[in-house]
Image 1 (cartoon, rainbow, N blue to C red):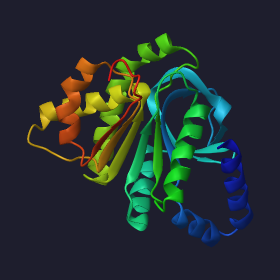
Image 2 (image 1 turned 135 degrees about the vertical axis):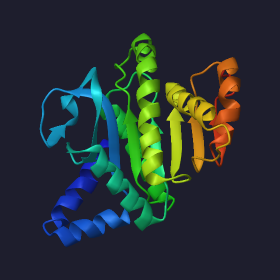
Image 3 (image 1 turned 180 degrees about the horizontal axis):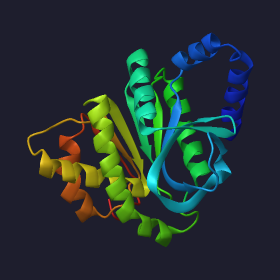
Image 4 (image 1 turned 120 degrees about the vertical axis):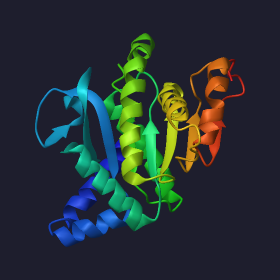
Length: 239
């Protein structure tokens, strides 16, 4: 995934001396964007993956991934780019919520793998990775981040849905990422009990959640998604 990002970025750099060429590349394939809870070690418009720390920031940072550097945007700029790419591609936004114990760099690698699989299937909509600042190789530390993640993700997703509209988002949540999606749906069910189908689909990839917790949120998850898919291993003792 790292090499494919580098190759794609290099190819883009070679043809993007003119803005017209750069725009034509962007229209063929949706961008790889991020919303990140991590603190930055350095401030600037172009940063490296190693500049993102494990500590949680008070405010989200937004941007896109290209070659070895990230470009930063305001929330308004990000939402505008996503809306434009959804319209031009005719495809929904894929919102990826990672699981435990991954760095920002690993999160973007996983997101890039998903995006490549979608593009291979002819689905060229944008992909947005939501990074909730999990510490590497630290499950207990990841669990400790969940309360803040639930709150931040729910508020962010409310703003995103308000901007893009209903049925414009497919959510892919891996492992502990399900807890963020659960919280949004349960809160939305309280505030909008008559509402339905906010998302085109919700895909839960090997969710790290016990059976009783999943059953508590199952009705809300089904209500707010056009399709709900649960992927789990046969030896998953919880699900």
